[in-house]
Image (cartoon, rainbow, N blue to C red; front, side):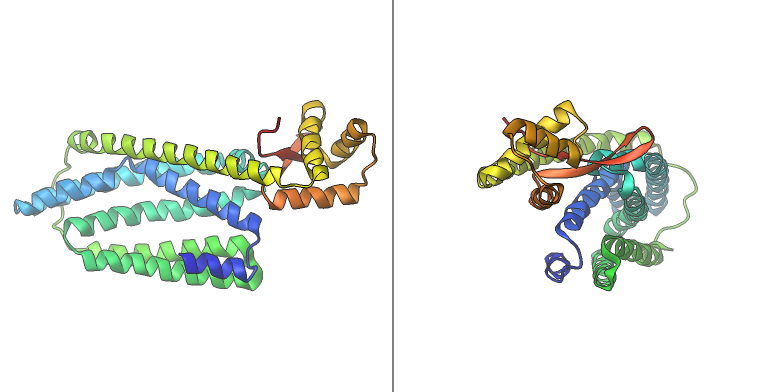
Length: 309
C-alpha cells in the first residue's frame, strides 16, 4: 500500500488534490461496507465454524446462504441509494458534483468487495487461511499494479479506481471458485435473528469506533491547518480572512474576494495574482473550490476549510 502511494505521488501521476480525493473515496468505501454489512460476515464465521465443529455441514451451509443473501440484499440496496445520491454526496464532500462518476466507480468496487468479504468469512469458517491470503494478495497486486499503471498513462484518479474495480472483479471470481462445492447444498434457511443478535452489537461498536476516529482526524487536521495558517505571510492571512468575509456578504467568487479585499484594506488586488494565491492556499488545504448554482448557471466559489477568528 505504501509503495503504491509513493509511486503515484512521486511520479506526479496524481496531484495532491487527487490523493486527497482518493482518501475520501476510500473512506466512502469502508463506511459503505461497515454500514451495509452490519458485521454479518463476522457472525457468519462464528456460526458456520461452530456447526462445522459439531459435524453439521448442512447447518453451516444454511448459515452461509442466509447471511450471504442478507449481505447482498443490504449491499445492493445501499448501492442503489448511494448511486442515486452520488451528485449530492459529491457536492457535500468535494464541493462540486463533478466527482459523482468517481463515487459511482468506488461504489461498484465496494459492492463487489462486500461479496468478497462474505466469501472470505466462509473460507475462514472452513479454516482455509491459505486461500484467504491468496484473495488478499490477488486483490492488492491486481488493483495496485493496474491502478498505478493507468495513472501513469495520464488516466489520473479514474485509472486508480478502474484498477480497484479490476482487482475486485478478478478477486471475486477467484473467491467464488474457492468456496464453490466446499459445503453441501442447504436444504433450509437458518433464522436470521440469532445471527443479528450477535452481529448488531459488534456493528455498533465498529460504528462508534469509526465516528471517534473521524472526530480525532478532524481535530488533528484542524490543528495542522491552524499551524499552517500561523506560518502564512501576513498578506495571505488577509486573503484568507477576505475569503471568509466574501462568503458572509457575497457568493465567494474570485471577483467577490477581490472587491471585498479592496474594501477592507483599501488596496486593489489583480484577479490573476489573487487566483494564484488562492490556488496556493488550496494546495495546502486551507481553502477549497466549490461549484454552486446561480440563476441556473454554475459559478466557481471559494470557501475556507478552517475556523478563522
